[in-house]
Length: 134
Image 1 (cartoon, rainbow, N blue to C red):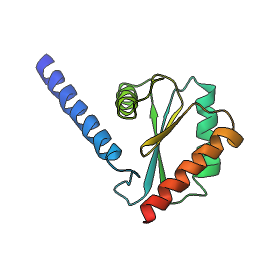
Image 2 (image 1 turned 180 degrees about the vertical axis):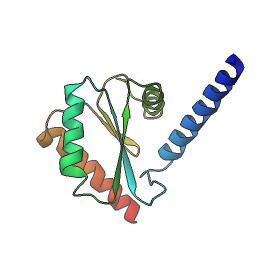
Image 3 (image 1 turned 135 degrees about the vertical axis):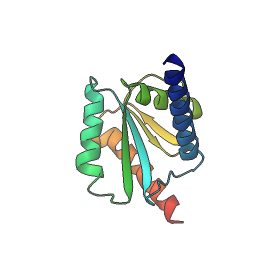
């Protein structure tokens, strides 16, 4: 029983790592559906994360139809593993803080307001979309 659980965990970890490597090897992360992808790592107890998610859901998703927004809850094993994998690949100095928005090989840590951090999100998204159109 323990060997089976260990084997499942090893297979799962390999899948997580391979998915992360594929996404990070592309300057603009293009998903299987042809859409450009951004990733948001969040904690359900973080008010800044909730502001970032609200901004993405209400102001970004309706406007950018060619963008896929993938969210990972860092309080889960999967979300935490993805978070630290990306933090390492992005050479982040402040790994552990949320929200973390990943735009290909760029990222924004934290969320101040729609006017400050939200504006940076839009700049990254538009740059990614321009890159995927080339």
